[in-house]
Length: 469
Image (cartoon, rainbow, N blue to C red; front, top):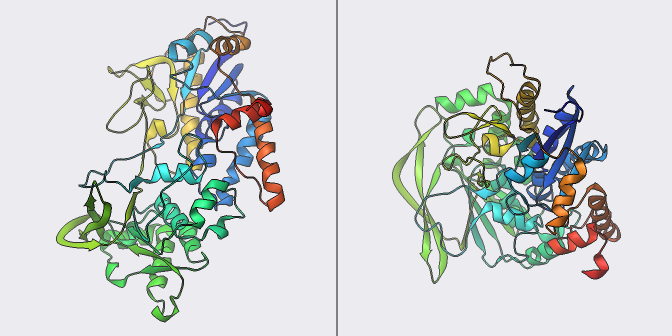
């Protein structure tokens, strides 16, 4: 590699994982030039389009990410779709290394009968809708009084809370106008959340769970008969303060006086109920949910009992996890939903590192862990990239692989390439225009921002061509 220019690195995906990787790389001893590509007109990925609007504390992560990109040493190139506007062979012309941080945006499958019936939805699609993702429809069919949510994690809680919450209580947030209007007319009265394991195995964050108890005019109902604790449960409670807090909150709710439950909407939490079948047909859509009562086996896992319950619900949302999407010209593990890699080094079918290709975030390890966990993940990937760039093996003794040597080291070359293809690339200044516009929309209403949803409108604002839109 030529020593008379900086190392050129492209990071594909401008969510937290991509920004953390870029930041860590920029602080190494390498002389490096970093371009951060994003498919959408706006950066920040999961924090902008995957966190519920009534979680401003988590949304504040954007402020920290904003500061990283605002320094000016990492170049944002948004509105560029990898696999459409350019591919790996194109990137190799301009970059010595490429890091893929595209995340996981699809819903994991739930292979039970009836899961594909009308009014059976994936939580990821619903989250994208209420967060104003430009690639999903602007409408959502909220027309049922009783709804089921399948899952025992924070996404399931978010979906259940948004479904049960009164729309006016979301107005202080950055909820898009079209989402507010549809939620305002929702007829929902009861949201049922089903978890196949017990309270001690729930993956709720304590704070998120406690927040449910403070939603206006929504009663949280849990059922004492769903509470069972085996040796594995007691071990989890004694070893994890988070589990202990979750179990305490749930237990306190079982002690509520039924006479005090007078809200117009109810959020039911059911444990030890495994979804077995979504009831209904293609013509009528979802008419119910069948669950099988489970029992703990002693180690925190469960088995079926053969006892089934049918629940009258008109819609089902599965929140059983996210799943990665394959990337053109990049190996992909269809079973795990990740790019196959060895500590961030992307490997081919023979297990060999593909020179100059790396990955980080959920597309590297799967959709587990909170947003902050991506920092350590990115550090691991960047450590190996630096080893390969310098030819210095790490403590693990794994041999280094020389990087790709880009033919075009001039940072302007990739912009010229995109322009020739008619791609309207959006830079950091363009994002600032869109950011300012959304904040201006929110000011008269006392809100931090109101998101612009249509993609063409976002692009027009970012490129200062709103009058032509």
